Length: 333
Ligand code: AMP
Ligand code: TRP
Image 1 (cartoon, rainbow, N blue to C red):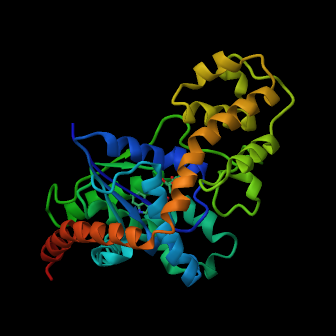
Image 2 (image 1 turned 45 degrees about the vertical axis):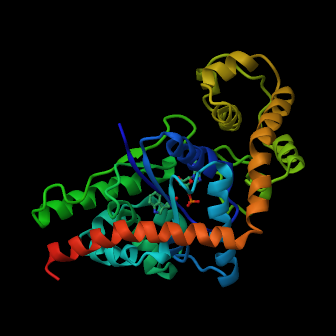
C-alpha cells in the first residue's frame, strides 16, 4: 500500500551513525519503495530553538541535504526541502499551539533534557518545538513518520493534537492521524563511550560518535577505542542484559548488516571483542566511507544543492499552501 512519508532532520552539524541507523537508512528504504510519496525536510526552524551561528547554519542546511542525497535519497523521486522556505510551517505552528494544552507539552521529556537545569533560560521555541513538529507532519496529510525512538513521544503528541483539532472544529478526518515508523530494534544507537547515553551530535567527546563524514581511519580508531567489557560475546541475547556497551556494538553490527541480533550472536558468540571490533570497523567503513565521500563531493556543489532545495520547496509549498488555506477557513479567518 502506498504511504505518505514525512520526516525531518535538524541542520545542526555532526550527523552521525545514530541519525543514519535510526532514521536516514529507513528514509532511503522508503524512498526506494515505488509507490510511496516521501518528503524529507531539513528542519531549520527547529534548529534555531538553540542559538546557531549564522554561517554554520547556512552550511549545515546544505550539508544535511547533501547527506540525504549521498545516503541514497533520490531528489527526483522524493521532495527534499528546508522548512523555513515554506511559510505554512510557522503559521500552522501558531494555530496548533492554540490547540495544544500546556499540560501536554509539560510532559515532553526531550524539552526537560535539552533545557537542562535552568529551564527559565530555555527559549519559548524550545518548549513549543513539538507543536512545530506536529505542524510539519499534519500539513502534508502524512500517513507514516520514520524516526528514531527518541521522537516517539513527539509523535504521540502529534496524534493527540490532530484528534483534538478534528474534534473541536468538528471536521472529522481533516487532519490525518499519522503512524510512527520506528524500527523495533536498533532505533536507539548509544554513545561509543557510555552504553547508557544516546549517541548525540552535542556530546563533547568526538570519540562517542561516528560521524557520517568520518574517514576510514577515524572509524577504525573510534571503534578500537569504544568501551566494552571484559567478557566474551555471548551466544544468546539474554546474556547481554546489563552489558549496554556490548549490546550497542552488536546492535550496530546487526543494523548495518541488515540482520537480526540473533544472527550476529550466532556469528560471533564465544569470540572476544578485539576480533569483533575489527569486523565491525570493516563493515562500518565499507558502508559509511562511500556516503562520506559523496557528502564531501556534494557540499562543494552549492548550486546543485540550492537548486534541489528550491525545487523541493516549490513542491512542498504547493501541498502545504493548500492545507493552510483550509485550516484558516475551518477556524474562521
Ligand atoms: P536530529 O538530529 O535530532 O534532528 O534527529 C534526526 C533523526 O535521527 C530523528 O529521527 C532521531 O530520532 C534520529 N536519531 C538521533 N539520534 C539517534 C540515536 N542515537 N539513535 C537512533 N536514532 C537517532
Ligand atoms: N524533532 C525531530 C528531531 O529532533 C526533527 C523533526 C522536526 C521531525 N519535524 C519533524 C521528525 C517531522 C519527523 C517529522 O529529530
